[in-house]
Each structure stands twice: as C-alpha cells, then as structure tokens.
Length: 449
Image (tube, rainbow, N blue to C red; front, side, top):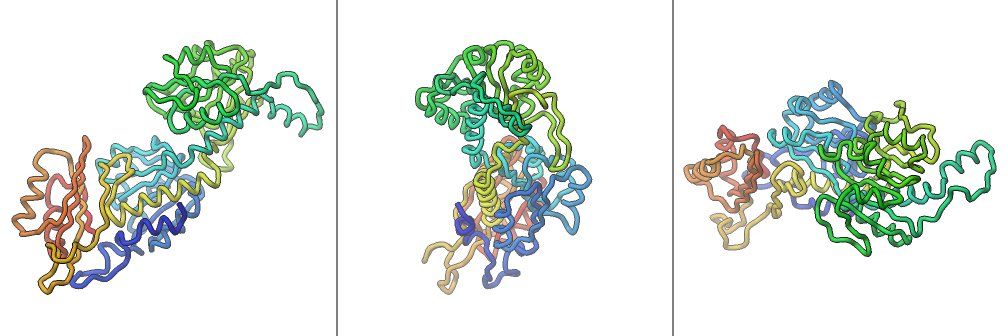
C-alpha cells in the first residue's frame, strides 16, 4: 500500500463536501481534528493525515506522565494519538484526554495502552500486528548465522586490529535444530526461512498450529528446550510468558546452545541468562528486547549481558526497517481514517469490530429519494454505549417517537460496550443525535454528515 492507496481507501468516507440543507460542510471540520504522533512514527503517517486535512503535530521521542497529559490536553485537546512502544497510555492519561477518539499503536503490541479503560471511555485502539513480520524474521535468521559464525567476536577483534583467522567455534547452521517458542506470524516465517537454509525446525505453541514445510510441533516447552541447538522466542507479553525462560529452563538446554529473544523483554530472566553465558552453559545469545529499556536515543542502556562473548545486543530494532515502518504507518493510518471518516472499527483491538459500507446515497426510487425525486443524503450516527440490557430498545424507541427513518443499522458488542451505527435521513439526524446524548448508557456519540 502507498499514500495514494491509503487516500483512495478513504475516498468518499467523510471528505470535505457541501450538502444542501445541512448546517455545516462536514460533521466536524477536518482542520480542527488534531493529531499527535510520538516516537518518530514514519513520516508517511503525518503526510497522509495532513493530506486528509487534519492538523498534525509530531515528536521524535516518547512522552510520559505530566508531559504526555499536557500534550494531549493543550489547546482544546487531541483527537487522535499515534505512539509506538515507549509511550504509556494509562487510565490517568485517558482521563486527561476527553476529546480523544482513537489511539494508533504503530507497532505490534498494545501492552503500553490500557485498552480496557480506553474501551470503557469509547476510545478506539488500532495496531499493526503483521506489517513488520518479515523484518523480525530476517533479523532472527541473521542472528542465528552470526552466532554460529561468532561474527560479533570476530568483528570486535578486527576493530581492535587483531587478525585471528581461525575456524575454532565457527559452524554452519545447516543441520542444526532450531526450536521456535511461539508459531504465529513471525515464528512461522522464521520456520520457512530456517528450513530453506537446511535447518531442522521444532516448535511449541499453546495453540494447535498447522506446521509449514517439515516443521514439527513438540508437546511441551521442556521437550523443545532439550532438543534444540538454538532456541528463538516469538511470544507476546502475558502473565503466562513473563519469566518464561529462567534458570530452570536454561538448565534444560543443550550445553553450548544459543538463545534468541526478539519477542518481549520480560520473557527471559536476564540474570540467569548472563550466568549461563559466563559459565559456558550457553554458547551465545541475541537479544533485541529487554525488561527495562531507555525511553529514547541518548539515554544510557545498561545490562548484565554487556561485554560477554558471542552476545548480540540490539536496541529493539526487530521491526525497524524502512519497509516495515512504512507498512506499519500506512496500515494504522488507513484504519484511523476509516474510523474517523466512516465509523468503521475494523482492526480495533478493544472496540467491537464493525465494517461499514461507504456512507452515500440510496438507489433511485428507494426510500432515500426526496419529495422532488432527488437523492437524499444520510446522516450516520455512531453510538457507543455501556453493554447493558435495554439500550437498543431505547434507541429504536427514540427513533420511533421522533419519526426518524432508519435506512440502515449495524450493531456489535463486547463484554463492556456496544457499538451501534444508524444511517438516518439527513433532515432527522440532529433530532436523534440530541436524543441519544441524553441516554444514561451513552459513552459517546458522534455524527457523520
């Protein structure tokens, strides 16, 4: 997808236009929609949003605490927030952002966002779970080769002026067994690449997965650890994965085996890993993620793994390729645009997913034809409410009492909220909008003209 494709996807979904008999050009002027993008989100995101007419502010670093709250509430408040993995969006932050409609996580994970509270406040959260899959998989394979050839140690010696042309400790990866903990989008990509290089592939996942190629699932993590020459982690951060690889698990691994973590920093006990590397239990390791990471460039990084032989440390750059970051930006922005311009919540990780058709004109001769035979536009009412019994009865009852004609209705719910979308005749939109605002179950309501 490119900029033109992203904009084309949003074409007709609430763009600036003038309708007869309406009080304003659009339901909310585009130039008044404020967007804040943090952490050096790829510039294509700001470019697309500005071309849509939104007001965009960017920051290269993460913001936290009072600085974040101030940035979100200044000058009337921000409507859309874009972050990566370092900015934490807590309930307190959300409380300071009453005008916030959506958060775009320009990354895979959303652990840094209180998605539950965002849901209860009617704030949609979008991420990009698949756009950097290839980049992380390629980094993993590169690390496997680098560890088996001891490239970091050899390069370090050369930079010091040492010439040590020796094959000692260097091996081909062909014929080695790689064990993948987690066989989702990234793990399965690593599986394909590793097998193409002649490696034997084992994997363990808590969910039954169809193996690709000749990869073979194992019944337990312990079984995988005992059989693998190199173990690569590809799991999300959950209560079940925190500390997944500790002293006991490392003790089960083959002597001289390698460990790679490009998943989440909390998955590995770094102290136990450092001890295993120092005493020769493990032959090497590569880590791209850490339990505690600097907030941005310029801040000092410290780890027990620094200075150890055959250890690759990278600053959380698994998905940081130009291709991946651009793909992520285009993916998240397209979701945000469809939400803002059309009301679609497809791809939201916390709100009920509703994929809406383009808001437009009904066919000739249908119920949307005006008295003089001309096509009549619709108002689209987007209503988020607490998911309790009787809300739809109240909504439909209010429409009936006001004589509002519903041209189309869409509803999805989750445990906490319901999302109902009404396409109503344009002349009746203001009436039902005001009525829905009064319902005690209403979280927020928005109209698209």
